[in-house]
Amino acid sequence: FHLKHFPLDLRILTCQMAFFQSNGTECCPVNWVEHEGSCYWFSRAGKTWSEADKYCQLENAHLVVINSREEQDSLTAMAPGNG
Image (cartoon, rainbow, N blue to C red; front, side, top):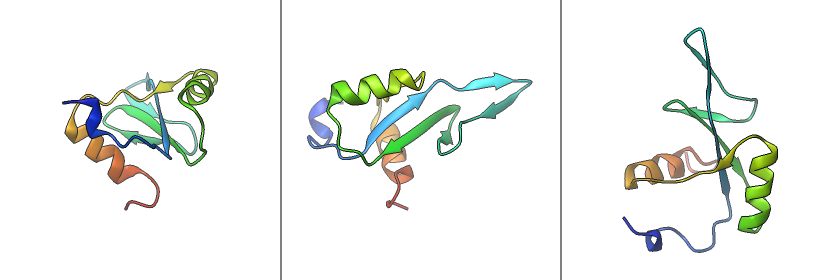
């Protein structure tokens, strides 16, 4: 799986937040989407990688790291306007 498979001009920044588990329940912040134990937030703002990374850190999150084609397809399907 190579990075070149990703679009070069990402218009939607994706942040993945570590999910919190309390008494066996999962909870994501408002406007975040839960998927397989993680919380995702999609932004339409056109920010640089550095700006997006800083924003995620302020939200106690990090930019998503996609590890498989299946994960990329799932995120694409979850993104606003794609489903």
